[in-house]
Length: 170
Image 1: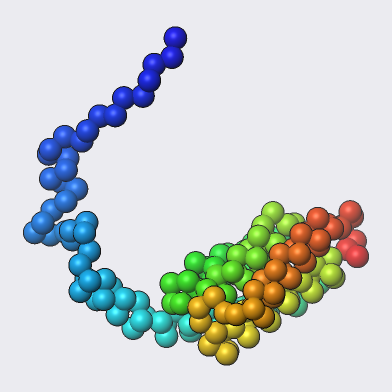
Image 2: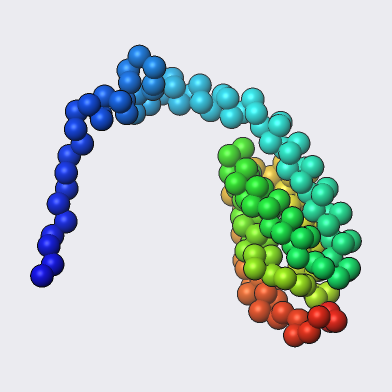
């Protein structure tokens, strides 16, 4: 016998704890509050850009270590940095950083070893991230950028499945 779900409204004292007019912010944001929050993000933009640039430098150095055996720690590092870039890009208005960072993150997720072609795919992602950052490409970009994202999706689909069958690397 199945029972229907019952919606129980929150108790008044819980609502009072959740919304504190003297210490918290109202759930309805005024245009002034939104503007103040946007200003905080814009002032932090340089810090975000510097952080992303530093991550890209580390990722570029990681590529050289992918030729050695024991790639797993390097792949984990690439995964973490691409995840951070994916999260930060949209925050500062670089939507393409988010999309390319997601593409790279999805590509290295779960990988334990990359062959030479897969390393080239990772390198292309990092080059594209550098290009977006260096050219200050904010927003979603245009037709060219959309084509680049589509191409990354196709490359990821094709080469992510092409995992090396042995530990010698191909």
